[in-house]
Figure 1 (cartoon, helix red, strand yellow):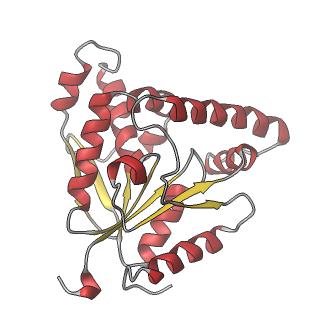
Figure 2 (cartoon, rainbow, N blue to C red):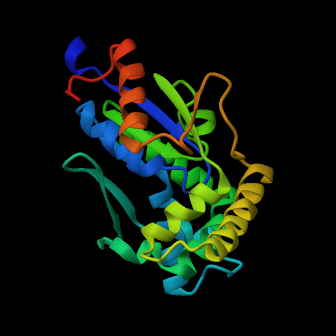
Length: 230
């Protein structure tokens, strides 16, 4: 593979609603790469196990091994399929979001997701986002970034994403939910949420999304990653 088309992986981690997925998608487009969303896989497993009724069963691990999940390189991203179907917006359903943290804490789930992410990224130009992408999934990523933001700002963003008016009282409640998720993700035994030692931390609380993307693209350019324009 020539230098212009060489494969690379950029890992973008951070807590819930810190802007990881939107940033990763835009960085991937700027660098002529593919966006690889790890959270989508965890939600897909939560969605399927809820829909099929085995999320709390003793045979969860064996059912998971039989669950066909594929990632196919598409236009700027990897297209997800579960039993031949794209779950789409169903992955954002409240009942799925409420259980994804529990599901993602299971060793069997993390093993399946890590394997699929690594398989998808092999030989590709990828910008991947999640909570342990730079620490566990791609420890040798070409560039690692850790996005943060205050809980209140993340709550405001999430409410806007869900189409709700982010009034002060609602923001406080949502911020408490996010902080509880942060604690659960940071304290779990397997691949806890943390900044990789060699990751560059960016606090996005008061930085416009365009500036965040621009900064990461600049960092990538400094490492000769990507051929797109921004």
